[in-house]
Image 1 (tube, rainbow, N blue to C red):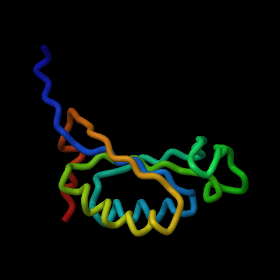
Image 2 (tube, rainbow, N blue to C red):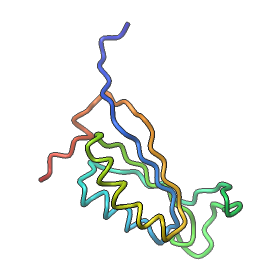
Image 3 (cartoon, helix red, strand yellow):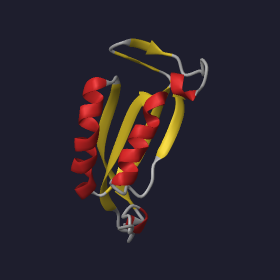
Image 4 (cartoon, rainbow, N blue to C red):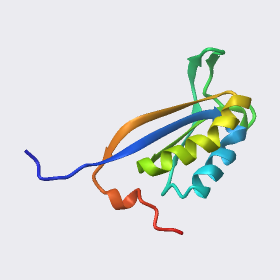
Length: 111
């Protein structure tokens, strides 16, 4: 058995149209998520049909996924900020249980 300790966190995945990425990242910055990863040109099929992952004109016209990992206490503020947006715009949000080895990388020390 390994002596490494894993720390529970929440993983949030937000899939939105590229034109709205800055709204999502602004929310994460305001709530002081320690970081996020943006995946561009996402392909997939949902309730509105298939979305192709290639660029049509620029990144704002394709689907993007923003992924962040945060401590549980940041989950509700993030969801509260994104819920009204997702009620008006197309997109999906997923919350998963995650474990991290280096907890200090996910606890923002900014005030």
